[in-house]
Length: 274
Ligand code: SAM
Image (cartoon, rainbow, N blue to C red; front, side, top):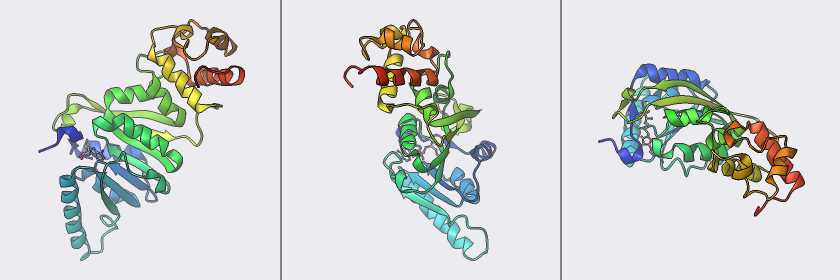
């Protein structure tokens, strides 16, 4: 029985799995992390292309089954002279949120992520971005739309800026809910996120930059001069110095404008309670 609390909605449709592989741009030099291999369908396809696959599964039952199945395939393969698959797969039983990605060399992530950890796992991977090249993730459609959103749209917000600051995300295609077993309540989308060599904009103080972004969007219907009152007593003057009209709203600001605002603030003023 699939465990709902572990986000177990499995993908079996080979045409969708092939499309995921296609947009992930994997090469035979790549080390790939797969979060939640489940029944191992995607894992096998990844291992046929990549140099190495590290598959982290939290469910002990699935992990044990996968290990046994792949050991069996291995023993069969040792009588033949076939390619390295399945010898290039390492299965790990554990929580992908706790995995020490920092110890890896260059790596990519290709995964059908369990819904309940989507945002924390994206933030965890961005935190470990030093050697991370790209992420190809199957996630809830609404979250994908927020990640790729541009200013002046309802989906644009903290998540869009947090990802786009470090990376270039693209929504590749929609996966209808009917493609999963069991069928979830929402549709999914596959995104490909290329990590940038350096952040998209120059920011003097990242902590302050993200504090401004979070504060501005916490009251997204208000004008910036109102929503950012908690940041500085002179927020109107600071906005003007950054050439941003104080009556604009958070959702109209580009990342470049948020960067400019935070740089003006950190140059000219001491922000409140920093
Ligand atoms: N990759 C498979 C597929 O595409 O059919 C399974 C995807 S299913 C959406 C998510 C998988 O992640 C399940 O196998 C689940 O047990 C596993 N999982 C859930 N939470 C996890 C965690 N914190 N760390 C690692 N795996 C997890």
